[in-house]
Length: 458
Ligand SMILES: *Cc1c(COP(=O)(O)O)cnc(C)c1O
Image (tube, rainbow, N blue to C red):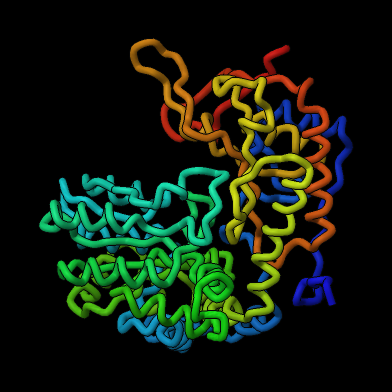
């Protein structure tokens, strides 16, 4: 059969609210043309993020009912610990409330001011946690990883020559190395096993610990199965285990490939580091057998980590992004290619060539998708990364003007995606008469969350 179906059936439903075009125009105006400020109830299809937004399975909900809420030594902790050990092979498993808590703990104990942490590309919270410890977060992704139209099977790979050069010169000031799988900030692009192995060997040759930022480890493992020589016949469980075997530990946001709405962990082999991490955990997150989570959360996570490695799920997951990408490209709409695991990124610069960066083409497209179809995406361009020139007060453009549509796990069906594709095409059809936006108010930091806009022609 040619038709790939969602590998699940639905036994509980949550209605989503249809609104009229007139209502959406009013809602958007009231939200100052910033979809972060729209109530989720007014959204029809929410592609804001894939983090913590997915649907849990019947087995996960059932597991939650047997959650053991004992303060210390809960049964649920041991189930969670066994599930993580089985997949990662790491010795010490420390639960945290989400990924950034694991990052904060790891970097607080390992990173000193003035040091350098290399990564293919640091995710924003990872970078922020490195910089908070007054160290430098150095991104070393291959050059293709920064070119939206460049085709490469593993666009998330680390540039090993650059890594080698950095290690030769600065190994004494590198406390640990990181690798983000998949490379979220670069479009959810995978890293090859060969690249993980070689990067791991380089760090090991200098006795520098190497950690995976493992948020989307299962999606990455399936890309390896599809694209890398010698892995086609291996199970994703075996592939994932090999990925972890090249590292000394990992940080994980379970809100991604943990298939839960909240949770994370730090896993590592070094017993002394684990003792320090647990001490810090007790200070801010909780006792080491719950780490800021409820027993029921640990139960759901233990099941989610097993379910995310089901190959029919991963096939459907990766095909979803690819399917949307194919249809957009066929309509002449440029995207980051090839599509990654969890999202499609539309190139808004090419979508609206007549709208300059200081009129925010990505934000314009995000607003159009809401107006036309009640769909919410997020701008990743000059609103998020653009800066004001301190001398002139002029806006400085970001490198790229993108709109990210990120896909919650197991939540939407193919017809939801078809509807989204139709909406994007409708925005494309009226692109020439679409005008830019101006900022009417902005906060001093992280302006994309709360900035206010107005249409230019008003
Ligand atoms: C989401 C994410 C994080 C941070 O995890 P939170 O659970 O949001 O704190 C870190 N790294 C990557 C690659 C992520 O995608």
